[in-house]
Each structure stands twice: as structure tokens, then as C-alpha cells.
Length: 132
Image 1 (cartoon, rainbow, N blue to C red):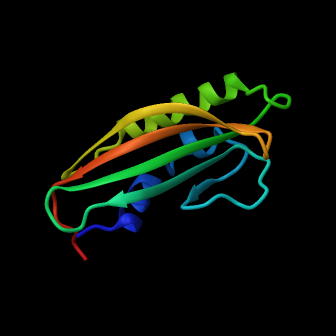
Image 2: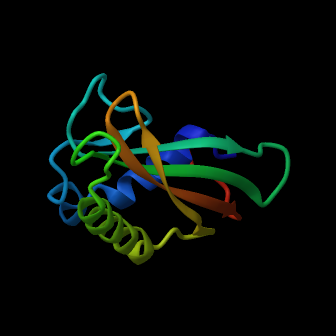
């Protein structure tokens, strides 16, 4: 059976391509973001995965962090540009034995950090069996 770490790693590998990593000033992060980062970072994580039955169902996030132009004013252009690059990389990836899709897309404010982030909610249906 797959676990949250496997799903996060598969998603990270799908996005760890020059088109994505060269588009941001910061890092593509697997699981967590560097403390107090002021750069454009992309964080990939998985919040749930079923472990009892097949297909396994999982929910992951891709969060694209961009500093505000000024307090409370998001940098819409950068958020849009980066999220489109990420979506293209994600959608061009083949997750063999799995149905993986973006179920939701939203923008949220991090007022304490003076930034906004785009959240891509990813849903998984995992049909294959993990090979160790």
C-alpha cells in the first residue's frame, strides 16, 4: 500500500522539472517550506490517504507562495504565471496505475507573512500496488 510520503514524492517528482523550478525565485519543497522564506516557493504535501481498501484514495496539495506587491495586495501576475506552469507540468505527467486530477483551485492570503498562495487540491485514486 502507498502512504502519504509516497504520494507526496510522486507529486514532487512530477513538478521537479526545469519548467517549474526555473519559474520561481525560491524552492520546490517536499512537505514543508523553509522558515521565514520571502521567496516564491512551491510546497507539495499529502494530507490523507486510505490504507484499508482499493482503490486507495488520497488528497494532496500544491501550494504556490508569492510575496504581496504591498500589504494585502496579491501579485496576481506572478501567481497566475506560476500556477499555469505548474498545472501544465502536472497535467503532462503520467501517473501509471493512478487517476490523479486537480479537483479545486483557490487563492488564500497569509496576512502574517504578507503573501498570498494558490492552492491546487489534488485527488488520487490509486489502483496499482506499490512495488518495494
